[in-house]
Amino acid sequence: MVLPGKEPVVAQVASIAVECGDCGRNRWWRPDQLKRFGVTGNTPLSALSGRIVCSACRAEGLPGATIAIQAAFIDDRQRLRSEARMLNDREVSVEGSRRA
Ligand SMILES: [Zn+2]
Image 1 (cartoon, rainbow, N blue to C red):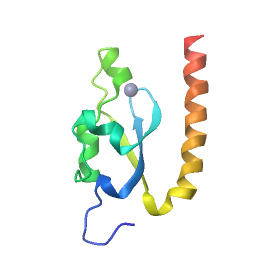
Image 2 (cartoon, rainbow, N blue to C red):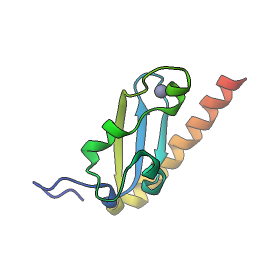
Image 3 (spheres, helix red, strand yellow):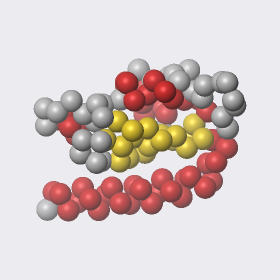
Image 4 (spheres, helix red, strand yellow):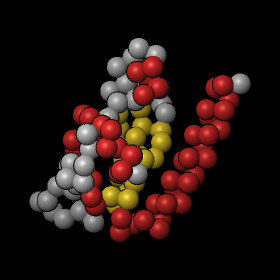
């Protein structure tokens, strides 16, 4: 739920989708998985794209900072959980074909 005039923070979301504009990788994170980026429950969602970098791009020497954030709010958890599962399945197949 996003209240007008109040910026949503990480504590309000169930999961966060991070899509890399450079390599196209897309995956869902739980907020507690973002602690290593310095993200806490009080971090505004608008600040996430400045903190998170694409580890796959960094590993290849690219900036990996062209990040798009999509948040699944806790209130919508049921609906968005199924979307997250679908995205994860797709990610697995993409990475598998890259490795092959
Ligand atoms: Zn990337």
